[in-house]
Image 1 (cartoon, rainbow, N blue to C red):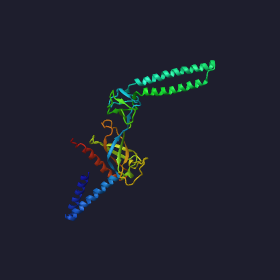
Image 2: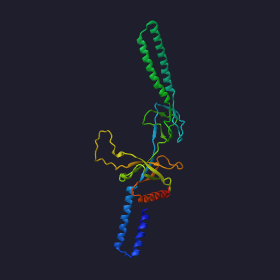
Image 3: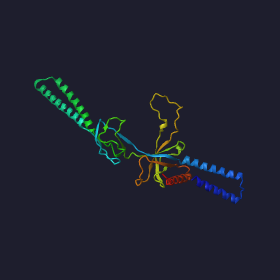
Image 4: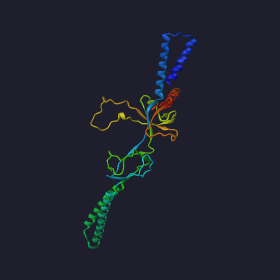
Length: 315
């Protein structure tokens, strides 16, 4: 685009020189080149301020680390990699034998305690037995019922199910491996469906010209020659570089933090289901503000030139 502008400019200057027969000397050449610098610099600065573009744009998604609630040996992994799942579908199974034994043991104790409670109640009614025994057995029954609920929960946890719609990727767990209830040791990663969002990161200079509803365009390196229409859906109000958290260190101005870029959520306005775009794909995005409309065409041309240039890939 810069080359096109310079070509038009120099052609215009050549025509002016020929028509008005202006002598070509060091002053003429200096004036022409100085005018080119001023013209091109002004146009590019206005375009960057009113219609900014970002090469740091990407589709993001939310993943869930699958961690078992109980410790045990994996005996079955029926889930398939990158296959769509519904909520409740089985991901893998843990050997239930020790947990079933715990449930059976507590159930037997609970049945015996309930029988003793019934006998104590009958004894009090018939022979005036001690009411303290009734309270004691009630407490024992309630305690065993609580233990049974916990044991049953652990037994049910031997079957790990999908937390929602999505799919499992990078599946590495196999039968015979040990699953442990530690957040730092997830068994697999679950990708949640319908959580994809496209975020473009812009510098802070044009932030007064970016508003919700502004028109935007996006290009992908993997889809050369295509430009996708979008809109600004949300402007996130906080930057990670300014975050403060509870810690012993005091805040210091000498800490060298980067400038920080504004995260802008874009929403596509066209159906993109015909294209294979993996979650997390990189992209280039441009936003068009309501000001300086006449400069929009330059940004649009630059974006399309960049999209067609993606064909020039040799490895």
